[in-house]
Length: 165
Image 1 (cartoon, rainbow, N blue to C red):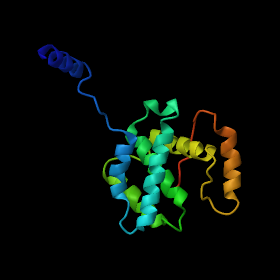
Image 2: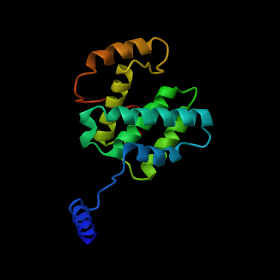
Image 3: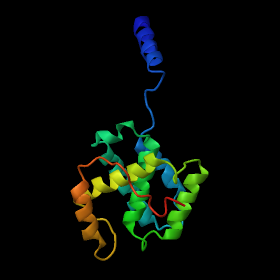
Image 4: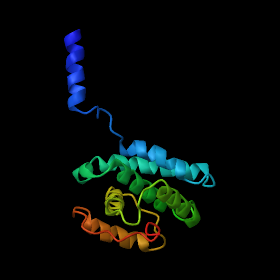
């Protein structure tokens, strides 16, 4: 039994005890606490579920393998908030969420990785056949544009107006 314990200890040392690194879904759970309590419970639930779905989508694309789990999670939540539409989660609530994200130390305006993850997740979501809530007529135009680019690697993504505070 001692040789098993010794081998296990040796393996843990070789891994530097990184046996359960944080995942995007773990960051989603933590970041969801920053969403305003004024957002209706049903909208919070939908944001949480959609963000979770998007983090699961990220597992299907090797591009995300080198990205920070916190970047994927934040991009998923921002996308989920955007997809709810301003009727369910107002710009004030989104701005407040982004404010708290900055307060905890995430540089959302200048972190290219978060911005790229945001764009890539949005494209993947639309490519799955779901239509974002973009307003009258804009959904078809956005779907056509994204559908043509869904297999392309993300080179540049325009900064979303509310990400660039």
